[in-house]
Image (cartoon, rainbow, N blue to C red; front, side, top):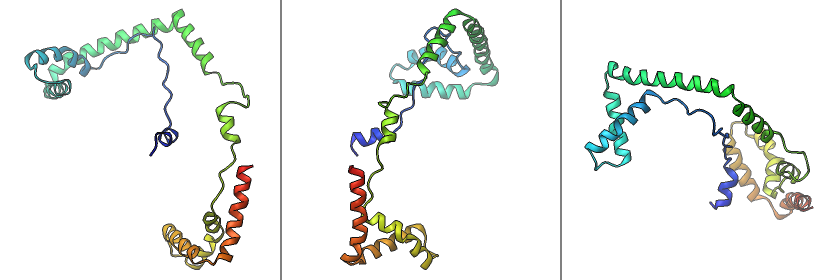
Amino acid sequence: KSEDSNESTKKKKEKIAKDPNAPKRNMSAYIHYCNGNREHIMASRPNLNFGEITKVVSANWKALSSWERAIWDAKAAADKQRYQKDLADYKDSDQYAKWQASQMEESKPASSDSTSVDNIKKKKPKRNVAAFMHYSKGTRDDVKANQPDLSFGEIAKALSVNWKALTDQERAVWEGKAAADKVRYQN
């Protein structure tokens, strides 16, 4: 696939703006453990790369007893209390009010002028349909009625076989519809 088709089919998530003045989030017990032990492991095993060090730290974390883990849980709980206090103080500050106001300004909907991307997409005409698609739409119900036991895929195969068996005169009807649809699309 070309890059253009990949870009058009993937929808990118909008990043949520982060206030640079907001307090730093609290860390989990595992992150506290990693930060406390990574340097020691790097010093004792300097030949390991970052991914291997992370695997060793993770294995050590899983092997901790409940009382050893409680030390790191306590650090995480203290950090969570720190964050909640800092966040409450921050939400009472003028900085937070300014940030909220700036976010409200940015999130206001754009004016509904005719040049916005959404309006342009809405105004684009629907693509023209090929002769076979007109034929399929027109005869699918007949095939279903004559052979009700066929699955959706089998109906499509039957329509294809029937299309190939049409004479030039029979096809001309469907090709005429396709030509008219093409004119509609181009105008």
